[in-house]
Structures are given as C-alpha cells and as structure tokens.
Length: 226
Image (cartoon, rainbow, N blue to C red; front, side, top):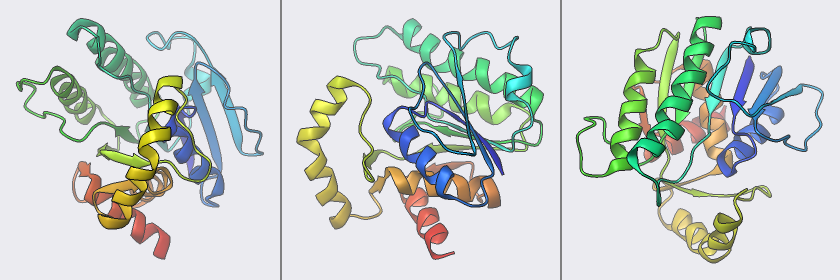
C-alpha cells in the first residue's frame, strides 16, 4: 500500500507516520507539509510546500497512491468562522479534490474531532465547519472515505505536540490523559493506535464512514492482534 500523509509533523501525524514506516505492507510513504519531518527512511519521500490551496503543479507528485491520511488541523480558538472555514474546509477540500482526481482508487481518511456536527447547523462554530468538511469529503469520488473522531489522544513513542503552546499544555495534561486511558481504554486513544487504525481501515474498510473514539480503539486492537 502506498500512502500520503498530510501533516506528519503534528502530534497525530507523527504517530501515523511512525506506524506507516513500521508496517511492512506499507511500501511507500509521501509526507506533505510546510516543513520537513527530519526523518530519513528508505520508503519515505517528502513534499514541502507553502501553498495548500492550489495543487495544479503537483500532479506527478500526488499520483499513484492507495490511501491518504489527512491529519492537518488548526484550533478554532480566537478565529472567526470565515478564517476557520478557510483553514479547515477550503484547505482540506482543495487537497482532497486533487487527490480524488488523480487517485480514484484511493481511500481517504480525515482526522476530524469528537463532537463534530454532521447537521452543519449547531451552535458550535468549529463543529459546524468540521461537519461541513466531513460531509463534503464523503461526497468526493474516492474509492472510500472515512472520518476519524478520536477525541482525547495520548502521545506515545516519543511523539510530542509540534506547537509550543500545546507542548506546554501537554506537559501538564499528559499524565492525566495517560491515567484516563488506563481507566477508560475506549475513551482515550494513543497516537500509535490512531495510526494502526488508519492503516487497518485503509486496507480492509469499515462498516461505518464515521469512526468515533471507541471505534478507533476497537480497530486498533484488531490490528494489533493480527
């Protein structure tokens, strides 16, 4: 399986990339981001670029892949709905539309958020925009598309948040998140579990297009057990 990962330097993306590089059935990985990952691996290639809205010059680089794991995302804190829509809906759909055109046999997996509003009419701005983004992705002509809503995530295997503010917050909250995962294993997933679940779903599919955190944890356990 040949995989594209968007956002491989973020916390979730780091975990997904690690699992892809470990998986023998993943034969090639292309990361797409604004900066290099700093990782060297025989099956890893990187596409570093600034413009995520116009992909007209990237057909050769993005063609020939079986799956895309889209982990890019920004916090809505302090943002207007228009700005958050541009950074979430517009950016994601620009990338996904290009991938669907170039790779009609692709499975596209999008990291969304717990509490996303599929009706697009709720009171929470971020949830409406995420819901609109999910719905639009599900309409694209991919082989299959899945929305992952992991909620609380524990960073493992040396993965760290890339944002300085998130790193400071995680230094305080990390032990609490780890304890919560041990107490409620279906309510908290690790970065490694998200990666394993993505690979499993890309390879074998899933009965539902939207996977909540309990679904993700269950798929990760299946992947670990073979």
